[in-house]
Every structure is written in C-alpha cells, then in structure tokens.
Length: 117
Length: 111
View (cartoon, one colour):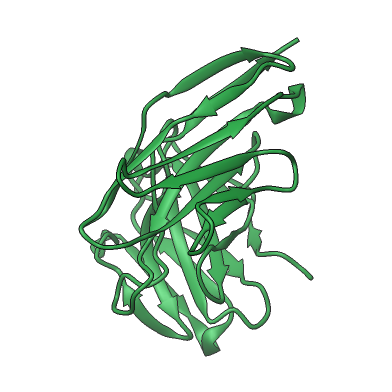
C-alpha cells in the first residue's frame, strides 16, 4: 500500500520569500503524484500533477514540483510567495495501473502555508 | 464547464440522527469518489464508484454509512445513525482519468 508524508504541518513565510513544501511517498510500484490546494471553506483544487515525462512540472500561478524517484519525493516550491498563496496544501499519489486502486488518491496530512506581509 | 456540485454546504445534527449528502459530478465523468476529511487531516477515501458500480468501499463503515450512485450520475452518501466522530467535511470528487476534481464539500457537525 502506498503512503504519503508531508514533513511540515505548518510553514510560515514572509511575502516575496521563497518556499518549499516537502512531500515524500512510499510505494512498491510506480505512482502518479499530485499537489492540491485548499482555501478556507473550499474544496480541493488541483495545483499540478506528474504522470510521466519531464520530472519538473509547473502550475499556472508560479508553483513547481520536481519528481525525484531515487528519493521518493515530490516537493513543491515557489520562488516568491504572495499573501494570496495562504492556504493548506496536500500532496497525493495514485496508482497508474488498473485494478481496484486505479485512480484512487491517497493524501498526506497537509501543510498549512501562511504568508505574512 | 460546471464543477462538482454538493449539497448541503453545512449540516448540524444530534448524535444518533441520520443525514444524507448529495453530489452531482462533472458531466461525463465515470468515476465518483466520496472522501471524509477530519479537521487537521488529509482526505480519506470512503467509497469509489465507476459508473454505478462500487470499485472500492473498503474504508466505508458499513454498519452506519451507505452510498449509492443512481444511473451512473448523481450520488448520495448517508449516515445512520451518526456518531460524534463523524464530524468532518465530506468531499465528493469526480474524474475521467488521473487527478480528480472536488466539490466544495459538506461540513457535518454532530453534537
């Protein structure tokens, strides 16, 4: 069974500073990787995903994540954060193959990013 | 394109009462999920449907929770009777492939 560990429960940063939210996963088979963002009282929104190809994936609002197979990590980074990036971020994995687990997302515990002015 | 619709947004009930949540997925999405998100935790899958068939309900507490997906479109999740520990946000999601789209969720408070 796969599992996801987000290493920081809370990350406070100042506006315009860089940030990294860490995510490690455990799986005996290849997985697909996702980052979701959740604003207060909202559902989860897909931020970016890695399915195959380039190990560096980017979102439309400046976030990027790099898949590192040897370290089983998928850390999320942004070079300069804004107040509006304040939210909870979830890392998730799913199985690419068929079977009953196909498409099912397994989430980490979440990281609350707070951007201070 | 309309997103995943859920209702109600908020519900407060007393323990031992019953409650039902409704979900309308994105049109054409064959896969539908119900997740439970307890405060401070990541979402946990309760049940996964493919069209109107159940793919995975291994984490669904079947003594009190039930779910159905009629005609492979809308879905309802029911809790009967509710316990205090059922207080959580219940998220519905749908997908065509990998990477699901989520509704805004129903926040359930059991008192």
